[in-house]
Length: 237
Image (cartoon, rainbow, N blue to C red; front, side):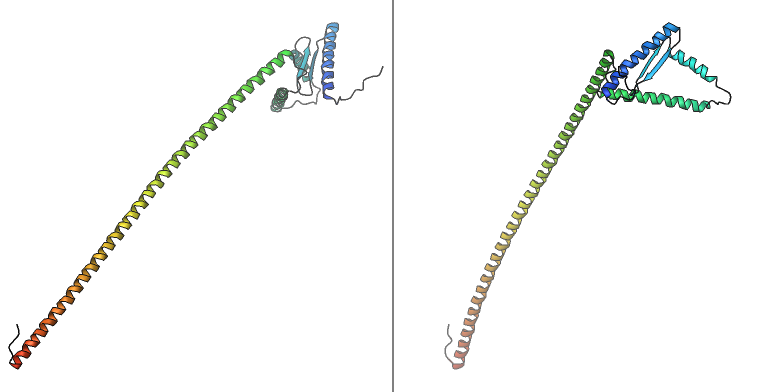
């Protein structure tokens, strides 16, 4: 019988299946060890995605606390880190665990690393995804309605501005027509005045020419009378 070569399994599905089987086998062996040997056992396992799995014959926290008590009795010369540094380390570990949990949740919501979830966990994940999808659709609808209202308001403003421009153009057109009529009327009045002045000038000229003829006749008559008197002839008329 060939032995299985102990090395990292590159195929992801095969690696996950092997992890699940070996983890269950490890927990089973730990339980048997606890029962057969009356030992207090605790096993903590983190998967490659950061998910925590644990088994304890009593309480994992109690076993860890008991372990910490034993590790505090360090050899002489060993120094414990300052309390401030220990608090920072604990906080860093807590944050790293929270980050790993969030990354795992995100991957699971994207449909990855679902093989290790139970039916109840899958159902809770489905409910979370459906709730998130409903919120996304609602936000999308609200955004679309907001854009539609904004476009309608913009359209109404443009229509009002167009109507105002049309009214202004109409008023300008009416003003140009009135000015053209006034210019034509002034032109007609000027023409009439010029014609009247020309008529008066012609009449005056005619009168002047008539007066000149009468004066010439009187001067001729006067000359004739003077000549008659000089010659001793009887005076005419």
